[in-house]
Length: 364
Image (cartoon, rainbow, N blue to C red):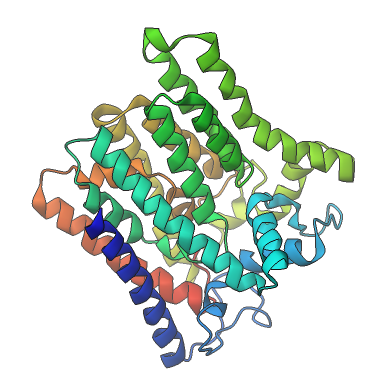
């Protein structure tokens, strides 16, 4: 565990220095990969304030919620109501209480969540997967191509922390605590509602577990999502408003033909990466099913299906970041060449995505 903590703290220092120096060394033109990117708002700014470099893209929507609350601007305009409440409310509560800058608070919250996530991933690997190297699991997690979002002013770190705590306690058969973390995950990201499925799989996997007191906690997980939708109904008088507004974000649960029409110029590289992430995740899910646990594989497949069902692979790399069984699987590979190849490719892409994100280029 000491080696893990040393690595995690070193990683935090190194990645922050890397993006700080890179951003102040490069002088890039605005990103033109997609027509909806507005160069008046999304351009590189050389800045020595390390906290500001973690605030990009969706970060501004979270800040809007923190500063102005949830607002619905009508069916034809983007609105902040598609962002779940735990992260922005946590940042606002602590920021107001301690009278601190919200960006500073959010970044620190995420760094703490990142450390906890690494520790829990290590413990899951160590306690439940004896053939996996627990330290390598954490290394693969921290060097996943889109791991820069763990430090961003996003909800990723909190969601991953809650999800890992959920799985850790459900594997320990502490179902009430597991369901509590599942509910928090469901209040942090829409995909958190999916945790109810692995919960039920784990409960029903052993006959001795099939007791009413073990099944009842499952209702708390979808309750997290339901609470947010009820808020929509009480405030904006529409229980399904989340799904309607998602259409404007290109997540309309129909085939997004525009995404396939952008195979020109720099966007084709993003499309190739998104496709590679998708294929990698699908293949890995079936290997996880064979080598690890049914609940892991089902959770992975369902998580992958959510963005795919919206008609686009855009941002799929970021959506794969919470799929921790990937890292346990990678750390259990017997073939040394495959392990090093996995890590090499991952580090190279992690470097690329870190530069893209901090330079205000589209990175997912």
